[in-house]
Amino acid sequence: MTVEIQKKLAGEAAALRVESGMVVGLGTGSTAAWFVKALAARGLTGLRCVPTSEATAELARDLGLPLSTLEDTPRLDLTVDGADEVGPGLALIKGGGAALLREKLVWEASARCIVIADAAKVVPVLGAFALPIEVVAFGHKTTANRILDVLTDHDIAMPARVRQAERGLVRTDGGNLIYDARCGAIHDPVRLADDLKLVTGVVEHGLFLDLADEAIIGLDSGVDILLP
Ligand code: 5RP
Image (tube, rainbow, N blue to C red):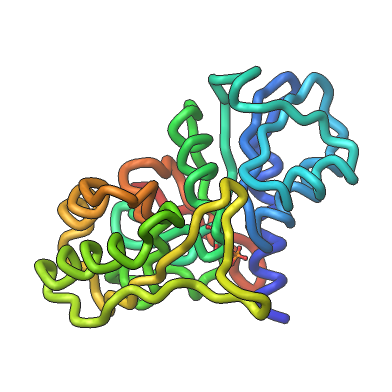
């Protein structure tokens, strides 16, 4: 319950950063959902909202927020989104909700990005949370072998595991698969991010580096602000 209160406080604080007329990216996940609800409650005018997943689109639509797409609004003023880990310099792991590709596309199109999270997400070193890697389904086991080569080169012993749901493999909104890499500790996130992107079949990974401008961390009462 405490965690949920922290997420709510972070989401509500972020909603106060939005002004009428803005183009706003809506993140995915339970923390982002608090932001979406708080944003809708503000009743701002002239907003256009770009959701990062079908789930967020449905929530925003239900709440009456005006939706747009990255095609129709390729430049955003602000994106607010959750994270699985918030590390030093606001380096992030994202993708626990399998929306990392759309999230990264929207973040990179935004003039400003705010990450919102509960206090437990703040870590001294990234990697305790398994790093999500989005992979095309065709030949994914071959791609997984090449991901293992990259991980081994980074002294990460565990192979990435394909994400399963009750009824089979998890599919992203774009129809891809997710592999989760239990890294333990990521000592060189920049090099790991670069190396993973070079693997054919890898669409995107959950390392969000140099993208967050500010973190709003929910506490039991109030929020803490972190800057890169
Ligand atoms: C979805 C994400 C989420 O923002 C991340 O998993 C955090 O989720 P939650 O706010 O539910 O803890 O990256 O792809």
